[in-house]
Image 1: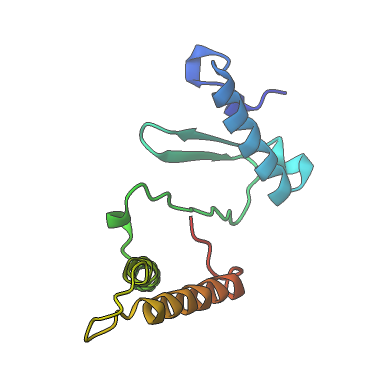
Image 2: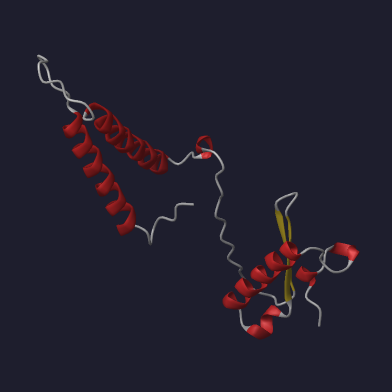
Length: 145
């Protein structure tokens, strides 16, 4: 028995350790989703250059579930409003913490006004703690990557 995911087209065996590990990981994930006997008949190949997944269904499965988890390399790629809102709230909390630290570093004793550094630092820490609590509580629904 040969499993075609371990083969690189007509060139024979996969070259390189990383290709082997990627294919083995995909194979073990498939084992989790199907009966062991069915996996011998279900083959697939992921073309990384074209970002396409080819599945050969010899098992006559009626449905196959594929989970796609996007990988973001830049903040500009985030388009979901919920994630943008969380990112803005996180940024504002960190900005308040930084500004609070800067404003509370030095105190002037003879000034007519006082800096609000301590208050900003407390607000930023409270907002950041609230945001982290929210993300921890909803970790089963949300999967940030």
